[in-house]
Each structure stands twice: as C-alpha cells, then as structure tokens.
Image (cartoon, rainbow, N blue to C red; front, side, top):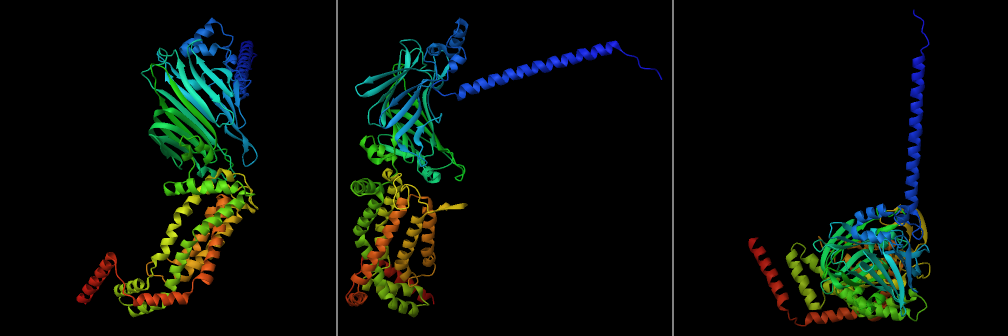
Length: 618
C-alpha cells in the first residue's frame, strides 16, 4: 500500500477556500445588518409622532441638490414644488373651541385627530371620532401630463388666521406661489359645524378635464359604548339626495349603494356622527359599509368601516365647492337646529312613528327632564302620562273581554249544539255576537291602536342622546344595559351579564298577559289557531333575552308601563265594570232588532248558500 504524502498545493487550496468563505459570511452579515438598520429607520419614521416626524427630510428632499430636485419634479410633475417647501413635514395645526379639538395634518391637508372635549367613552377615555389614521380624505385627479395625483400623499402649506371670533385655516397644495389647490377650514366658537371649502387657483392647465376628479372619504368608527353589539346596531351610513330624500345602508357584513344629487353624507356611530355637507350637490355618490365586528366577545376597537366616493365637477377648469364638516353628538335638537334636514340622521322611525317622536315624545321628554331631578324619574313620569292618555283604549279592550266572558256560556251551548256542523256553528255564533253588540275583534282593535306609540318609544329611547351616561338606581347608564351580575360564561342571544330591568319588565308583561289573554285564551281557542298559552309564556322569555343588551331606559319604560297598565285594569275590573250589568245590557241588545250592514248581510247570505248546497249534496 502506497504511503500518503503531504500535499502542499492541497493545503494552499484549503486556505484559499476558507478565506473566501469567511469573506462571504462577513460581507453577507454586513449587508444584512445594513438592511435591518434601514428597516428600523423606516419603521421609526412611520411610527414617530406626527409633530416630530419629517419623512421628507429623511429622504433628503428638504436639502436637495439639483439632481434630487429634478428627480422629484419628474415624479410629481408641477406638484413637485410642494415637496420643496418648508411645510413638507408631518406637522399638524390645531383648531379648537369649547366643544371640539381638531388637528389638521400637513400631509393630505385633512383632519388627523377630532376629539369631543365634553364627552367620555364608557371607560372614561375622551371620545375621538378621528385618531391614529382611522380616517382619510383624498382627491384623485390626473394632470395634463398624465400623472395621477393623490392629495393624501401630498404636503399642504398651512396658514392660520383669525376672522373675528372665527379661526380660519388655509391648507394649500402649491404648484407655485400663485397656483394651488386649497382646503379652507373655518371654526366658530360653540359649534360642532365647520365651514369647509375646496377650491383651486391657476390649475386650469394643470388638472386634466378629460378625467374624473374624485373625492374619497373613508372612516373606521371607534367603539364608544359598553355594548359593542348594541352600538353597532345603530352605527350606519346615511345620506340625503334629490332635494331632501334620505336613505341609509343599514346593517350587514358588506353593504353598498349609490345615489344622485347627494347633499350630505353621515357616518353615524350611534351617539356621535361625522357628516360632510355641500352647498352644491354632488352629481353622484357611491357608498360602502363594512362590518368590522367579527366576534362580539372580543374586545374590538372598531365597529364599521365606511367609504364614500364623490365625483367633483370642474367649472372653467377649476374646483370650487363650499361645504361643511360636522363632528359631534347624534343629538336630535342639535342637528335639527342647523335646518339642513340632519335630524334624519337620528333613527326615530318612518312615517307616523317618526312624527310621534318629533312632535310629541322629544318635546315632552325635554320638558320633563328640564325640571325633574333625574332622567330616570322623567322616564317614569312620561310613562305614567302616556298610560293615562291611553287608558280609554285599555278600557275598551277590557270591556270587550268582559263581554266575551259573559257570552261564554251561550257560545258553549252553540258549540255543543252544532259540534258536527262547523258552518252552522259559525253562523249562529256571528248572529249572537251581532245581537249582543260584541265581537272578538273589538278587543284587538284597541291593542292595534297602541302599536304606533309602542314602536315610536321603541325608537325613541335608543336614540335619546340625553340618556347617555345618565344613571338611575342601579343602572349606571340609561342608554346602555344595566348589570347586577357578571357571568363567567356567555349565553347565546343573552350575553355574559344579568340585567335587572329586563327581568322586571318580563315579569310585568307576564302578569299583564295573564290578566288579558289568560282569561279568554282557552275559552276562545279555535282549532287550527296558535296556542295562545304558549305565546303567553314565550313573549316574556323573548323580551328577557332580547332586552338584556338593550338600553336600560327602554326596559325601565316597559316595566313601569306594564305596572301602570295592570293597575288600570284592576281598577276597571273591580271599580268600573260590572259583569251583571253587562249581561243585562247584552240581553236587552239581543231583543232589539239588529240592522245588518251590507257586508255582514252578504257574508251571512254566502254562508247560508254554502249550508244549503252542503245539505243538498247529502
């Protein structure tokens, strides 16, 4: 076997390969570290506070040489001039009065923060409608040289001044010192409404008139209330169009719609709203609403995301729109005082229901709450007055039930006599009702008359801004659910807490149904009809589950209302209605000749003919 010899050339080769590997590892490490450093620098710039971050300076635009200036000019065209100004930073300008605190960012020229100074959220945090990039306003247009400009990425030059008691902020996106696109904000003392205008000067030959100029307004609504599901139910996008008509997207995972001649758009977050209004109607509006609450058990930051696209028209090659911004409470009185049809943002119900709320309940509740010591007492007093006003209807309903109870023995005789002839039994029963002056439907009609009031109040209490964060007894907030116990688990359709007002309301409605439906449901039960006893038990249970997450003020109203109704019915039963007198009156009516109406006579003739045909066949 040949002995291995030491190979000098192999040794030199190993050293060269090892050196090459070391050099490659070192070089790769250096490049990686450099990339990490660059990444960290970008993240620091993006996450830095707006008042101090200066991305333009980081990119070397502030102190640019002729080469850099040419590069910016090539990228932005004539609008590259705005990037060379000292205002090309992420600084903000503040507009504030006693109600509203706004910060307008140089970048994009839009509001980067909108805070309500007099309100807190359910967990005592200031109410922000805009913060941390949840909203944007962007104009998109094409320049005459084919560049697409997005104003949200451009830097405006601010100029703040006073005009009397008003603060005026001009934000200019400049092409030159005398040519620019301008946003003007005017804040007045004691107002949630700002004047806002978009206009251009000297851009006739800069903005292409052959392409659309679009205004895009986006916002993600922050959660402000204890129950995110309840708040989300009343969070929606609404708009006015075609000379005063209004519409809304409603609820859903993803909803969209469009309208012509739009005059305002409202992003309503239950008790607070962001609204854009215009003096010159937008030709068209495209609206989108997306639900962001995927799981109500998770502590979600946002409720819904809204987006609106509005085309702007050029006049003589220039933009000129006078508009308004509203950032404030969804309060009927405040919105109605502007006389811009903004009260439609408050969901008071359609048709007669809205009229009852606007002209009866809202003024009356404002009157009561103006001198009574608490809003809870105002609810109780208003409930008492409503029930007293409706007491004649309650009397009519109970009187009808008493008549039916008195006629029950005779109805039983007819049922037994004609048990094998349903048609004849129905004929004789109708004759008895007609002679006695009674009808099963006469008890239903008074109940139907109360539905408009019932539904109007159902809409009123969730929309009453005055109830927000106003406590009563054990309820901390009459605009949200009350809590007497927290559950360690979640019951489907019920929640993770126990509310007392819905329990009391459910007990009261059960007693009420026992006094009304209970005494006649078995007597008047007809084959094929729903089981009234089942409905009597089901209704209070449904109310218990349904109202557990609703406003405690609404549950308080139903509890007190049913208690008062029960009291009125007891008075009617034991002090007003005498069943013996009713029986005697019915017997007198039966002896009197009863003139039938055309419809009743026609129905009786049809039933008699059907009976004759049936007998002929037999």
